[in-house]
Amino acid sequence: MAHPAVIAAMVETGLFTLLYSSAEHGSADPVGFFDAVRTLAAACPSTGWVAAMLGAASCHVALLEPHARQEVWGSAPNTLVTASHAPAGRLTSTVGGYLLEGQWPNVPAIEHCAWAALTALTTGPDGAPVGLATAVVPRAELALGDHWNTIGLRGTGSRWVTAHRVFVPAHLVHTSSQPAGADMVGSEPPPGQYPLAIIYSLAACMPVIGAVQGAFEQYLDRIAQRAAFSLAGARSVTDPAVQVTVAHGLAEIDASILQLERDACEAAVAVAAGNVLTTELRLRTRRDQARAIERALAALESLRRVAGAEAIREGASIERVWRDVSTAAAHLVNQPEPALRLYGRWAFGLAVGDDMVIV
Image (cartoon, rainbow, N blue to C red; front, side):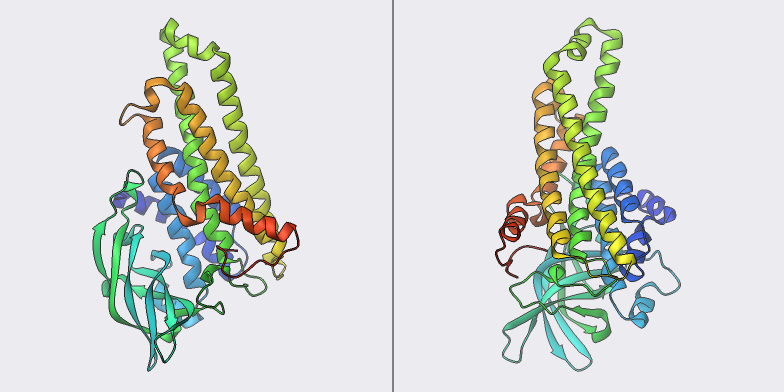
C-alpha cells in the first residue's frame, strides 16, 4: 500500500483539492491536476493512480449540499475520500435516508481515507432496482477485506470494502436521474459543473500515460549510461530500429496529452462560463481517452520489443511498468471499444443509448 509519508506529501501540496474546486465552482485547474498525476505516475504508477482516484473522488462530495460537505470536510478540507463506481451494493429507502448493503472490490487507498463514495443501485418498494446513487460513507462504518491480488498496481492499497446495513442520511447520498441500466457518472450535469464522466475517464487514463512516459524516460537514461561506458551499449543508441521506436512512442504519448489537454481546457472554459457541455465534447473526450490508452499500450509494447532483458527481468523498470499498466488498462473505463462505439454512433447520427458505458 502507499506509504503514509507519500500520502501526506501529496496532501501538503493541495493536490487533492484541485478538482473539488472544479466540481463546485468551476474554477480549478484540471489540466494542472492531471499533469501532476502523470508526473507522479512516471515515477510510480501506483502513486499516480492513487492521486488520480482520490482527487476525482472529492468531486462526489462537492456535489452534495453545503451542510453535507461541511460534515465531510468540516474545518479539515484535506480530509481524504476514496470511491468505487462498481454498482456493487443496494440502497434501500428508510426513514431519513437509506440502508446501504453490498461489497465493493478494489477500493483504492481506503486505509488513508476517512470517507468512501460508493455507488449502489437504489430499489423500489418491491426491491427491484430503479436507479443509481452514490453514498458517501464514513470509513469507520465499513468493513475492510483483503487487498486485491493482482499483477500490478499493488502499491495502491486497494481493498475489498463491505457495508452491512449501514444507515446513510439522505443528505450524504447523491442520486442520479439515470435508470438502473445506465451509468451514474453519465448523467447530464447542471450548467457550470464538470461532468463526473470526464473527470473519472481522465483519472483512469492519465496514470497510464504517465507510467508509459516514465518507462521511456527510464529506458533512455539507462541506455545513455550504458553507452557512456560500453561499446555494446552504444549499439542500442545507434540502432535505427531503436531510434524509430523511441521517436514513435514519444510522439504517440505527446499526441494523447495534446488531445486530452485540449478537451479538458474546452470543458473548463464551458464550465467557467456556466454552460452545459456539448454532447460532442463529452463523447470526444471519451474517444480521445480511449485512443490514449490504445496508444500508450502500443508504445510500451514496442519499447519492450527493443529493450532486451530490461523488459523481461523481474523487477526491472519496464517490466514493473508493464505490470502496472496492464492492470490499469483492465479497468472498465479504460476499455477502448465501448467509448469508440459511442463516438462512432454519434458521428453517424445514431442514438446514443443510456445503457452504453460512461458518457
